[in-house]
Image 1 (spheres, rainbow, N blue to C red):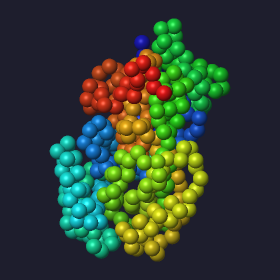
Image 2 (cartoon, rainbow, N blue to C red):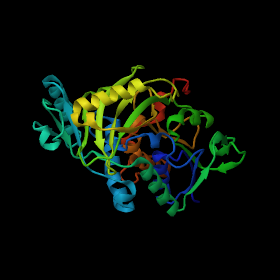
Image 3 (cartoon, helix red, strand yellow):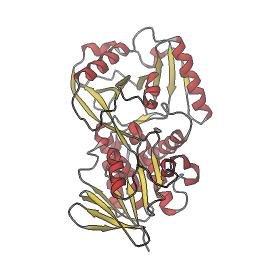
Image 4 (tube, rainbow, N blue to C red):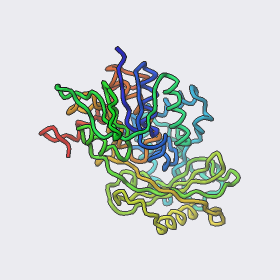
Length: 388
């Protein structure tokens, strides 16, 4: 009998889960209270990065995802995703910082990442500020347009028989053995399911609670600035070496590091900020000014460029800064696919394939559950078997 799967969340991670599960022949329904890609996905830059990840579980998932983004671009068409394999350039501002960056890159290279030390950074990015001592080029880094990518993956899932429904999940429905049998929607209906995938992004903690399997997924607010359209001025994704440390930090206060990249439409995206302020969406002009100043120091030409908008959203993170992907042992049939922080777009295809592999009980499209045990939700459970 065909396995019935309900995916909660129509962001890029939920769309990838639906795409892979439907491709594997499952009966898939995606449910979201808003439009496709309307939550955290629409607030991101579209990063598909290996360059910012330490060797370990997240980098393993990122390498799988990078290969699957290539597959998706081939299957769906690169233009449907605005897929750009343009590479990333990480630069240091001091000789000491450059030594640390290259030591980090050497560890990544040992884990299978292509990393190329660069002394003449202006040969790659002519508009960089003078005096940058060097950097590391990551040819595998890429970019997609996040909402287009989510929509393309979900359309492909629908072609494989999946359905998309608007609505909010109110609760999980379980049988006498404690196994999930479906979800109850806020409208009062029940969607039957053999498995439910929690791909609710920033709201993954709340959805997990409603399913009887809470996980600690917390919001971290971030801003992105957008310039007026320009001729091509920034060739790669360029960011300062301190970005990696800021991503891994657990500090509650505001942290910013310079990230600059062009888009196909000619605009330049500027980030990145991170701060723990709960679900506060207030615009903060001081953050905008700080990000703009950092970008102008890295690329002086930006001083004469207009910003046309600034947007903000939440990066859903777990306390150990790793996503939670896999079956929850407390409620059989519940699977988590959330907590990716600012890396959800890049990690989406690997997450979808890994969830599908868990659903099938065997490897799927290069995703082997036995190789990704560090992402399982049981790492958060107490000795009593509950996560608060």
